Image (cartoon, rainbow, N blue to C red; front, side, top):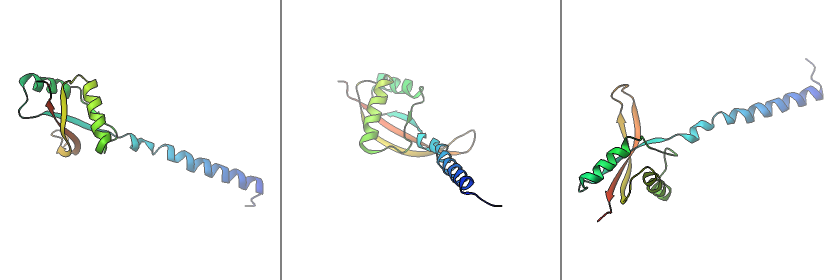
Length: 119
Protein backbone atom coordinates (compact mmCIF):
# COMPACT_ATOMS: atom_id res chain seq x y z
CA UNK A 1 0.00 0.00 0.00
CA UNK A 2 1.36 3.36 -0.99
CA UNK A 3 0.89 6.05 1.62
CA UNK A 4 0.75 9.63 0.46
CA UNK A 5 1.60 12.55 2.68
CA UNK A 6 -2.06 13.56 2.80
CA UNK A 7 -3.32 10.12 3.86
CA UNK A 8 -0.50 9.87 6.41
CA UNK A 9 -1.56 13.17 8.00
CA UNK A 10 -5.20 12.07 8.04
CA UNK A 11 -4.30 8.83 9.79
CA UNK A 12 -2.00 10.62 12.23
CA UNK A 13 -4.79 13.08 13.05
CA UNK A 14 -7.31 10.30 13.59
CA UNK A 15 -4.85 8.49 15.85
CA UNK A 16 -4.36 11.59 18.00
CA UNK A 17 -8.13 12.15 18.25
CA UNK A 18 -8.71 8.50 19.17
CA UNK A 19 -6.01 8.57 21.85
CA UNK A 20 -7.34 11.82 23.34
CA UNK A 21 -10.94 10.61 23.17
CA UNK A 22 -10.18 7.35 24.96
CA UNK A 23 -8.99 9.22 28.04
CA UNK A 24 -12.41 10.86 28.39
CA UNK A 25 -14.03 7.52 29.12
CA UNK A 26 -11.69 6.63 31.99
CA UNK A 27 -12.68 9.75 33.94
CA UNK A 28 -15.49 7.99 35.79
CA UNK A 29 -13.05 6.69 38.39
CA UNK A 30 -12.42 10.22 39.62
CA UNK A 31 -16.04 10.49 40.73
CA UNK A 32 -16.11 7.47 43.00
CA UNK A 33 -17.76 7.84 46.39
CA UNK A 34 -17.69 6.06 49.72
CA UNK A 35 -20.79 5.61 51.92
CA UNK A 36 -20.83 7.41 55.26
CA UNK A 37 -22.08 5.76 58.45
CA UNK A 38 -22.58 8.28 61.25
CA UNK A 39 -22.26 7.04 64.84
CA UNK A 40 -23.18 9.05 67.93
CA UNK A 41 -20.63 9.19 70.73
CA UNK A 42 -21.36 6.84 73.64
CA UNK A 43 -22.37 9.60 76.05
CA UNK A 44 -24.92 11.14 73.63
CA UNK A 45 -28.48 11.96 74.59
CA UNK A 46 -31.38 9.96 73.16
CA UNK A 47 -32.42 12.98 71.06
CA UNK A 48 -28.97 13.27 69.51
CA UNK A 49 -28.87 9.53 68.79
CA UNK A 50 -32.28 9.80 67.12
CA UNK A 51 -31.00 12.70 64.95
CA UNK A 52 -27.99 10.57 63.93
CA UNK A 53 -30.28 7.63 63.06
CA UNK A 54 -32.37 9.93 60.84
CA UNK A 55 -29.21 11.17 59.16
CA UNK A 56 -28.11 7.60 58.35
CA UNK A 57 -31.40 6.99 56.52
CA UNK A 58 -30.32 9.54 53.91
CA UNK A 59 -27.44 7.32 52.73
CA UNK A 60 -24.78 10.01 52.60
CA UNK A 61 -21.53 9.60 50.67
CA UNK A 62 -18.12 11.23 50.76
CA UNK A 63 -16.54 12.43 47.52
CA UNK A 64 -13.85 11.73 46.48
CA UNK A 65 -13.87 8.22 47.87
CA UNK A 66 -10.49 8.53 49.57
CA UNK A 67 -10.82 12.06 50.97
CA UNK A 68 -8.85 12.80 54.12
CA UNK A 69 -7.28 15.55 56.20
CA UNK A 70 -8.62 19.08 56.39
CA UNK A 71 -10.76 18.62 53.28
CA UNK A 72 -12.54 15.63 54.82
CA UNK A 73 -13.19 17.47 58.09
CA UNK A 74 -14.59 20.49 56.27
CA UNK A 75 -16.66 18.27 53.97
CA UNK A 76 -18.16 16.36 56.90
CA UNK A 77 -19.04 19.46 58.90
CA UNK A 78 -20.74 21.06 55.90
CA UNK A 79 -22.44 17.91 54.60
CA UNK A 80 -23.79 16.71 57.96
CA UNK A 81 -25.09 20.18 58.83
CA UNK A 82 -26.71 20.53 55.40
CA UNK A 83 -28.50 17.22 55.98
CA UNK A 84 -30.08 18.25 59.27
CA UNK A 85 -27.60 17.53 62.05
CA UNK A 86 -26.94 20.51 64.31
CA UNK A 87 -24.93 21.18 67.45
CA UNK A 88 -22.24 18.58 66.79
CA UNK A 89 -18.51 18.10 66.43
CA UNK A 90 -16.73 15.34 64.53
CA UNK A 91 -14.84 13.23 67.06
CA UNK A 92 -13.19 10.93 64.52
CA UNK A 93 -13.56 9.71 60.95
CA UNK A 94 -12.20 6.29 60.01
CA UNK A 95 -12.35 4.26 56.80
CA UNK A 96 -13.47 0.68 57.45
CA UNK A 97 -14.24 -2.44 55.44
CA UNK A 98 -17.38 -4.57 55.79
CA UNK A 99 -19.01 -7.46 53.93
CA UNK A 100 -22.42 -7.07 52.31
CA UNK A 101 -24.76 -9.69 53.80
CA UNK A 102 -26.67 -10.20 50.53
CA UNK A 103 -23.85 -10.35 47.98
CA UNK A 104 -20.92 -11.38 50.17
CA UNK A 105 -18.76 -8.66 48.60
CA UNK A 106 -16.51 -6.44 50.65
CA UNK A 107 -17.00 -2.69 50.54
CA UNK A 108 -15.42 0.34 52.14
CA UNK A 109 -17.29 2.89 54.18
CA UNK A 110 -16.43 5.91 56.29
CA UNK A 111 -17.46 5.69 59.92
CA UNK A 112 -17.86 9.14 61.43
CA UNK A 113 -18.24 9.48 65.19
CA UNK A 114 -19.98 12.71 66.20
CA UNK A 115 -20.63 14.20 69.62
CA UNK A 116 -23.18 16.76 70.64
CA UNK A 117 -21.93 20.24 71.48
CA UNK A 118 -25.32 21.44 72.75
CA UNK A 119 -25.39 22.20 76.45
